[in-house]
Length: 152
Image 1 (cartoon, helix red, strand yellow):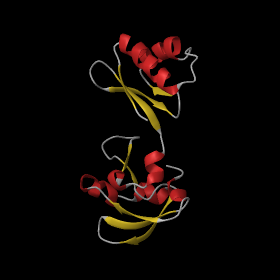
Image 2 (cartoon, one colour):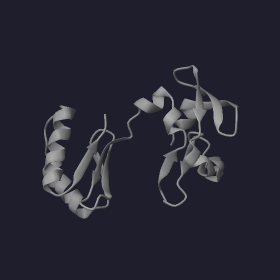
Image 3 (cartoon, one colour):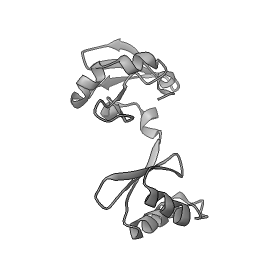
């Protein structure tokens, strides 16, 4: 959200959904294409107008307060592809997202049982090996009835 404007600059609108953009940090240009399913969401710019430092392609999801979407996800530049804002998503037994791991190992959740499980079982883990840590976290949370999706 806060770094988007510092990373991407729209140089030219090519069509109603195609843009020629510059990668400010690494240089070079890329073609961004707003995905068909996000065209209506992309057209709503009021939130972006209030936050000029945001990525020009980030939009709030109208039906989900506090959630945002990258409208060019499939054509996003390499700098965005390599940025990790969520390393793990955790789902409850009903398949609903119960929490996320942001950054390297910070849990974000409103699920009290997940928080307790994390604090008692995951937080004490003492390994610096991220792969081993993710495997152990999946096992701990799995025993508590959660399903984990880990991302590179």
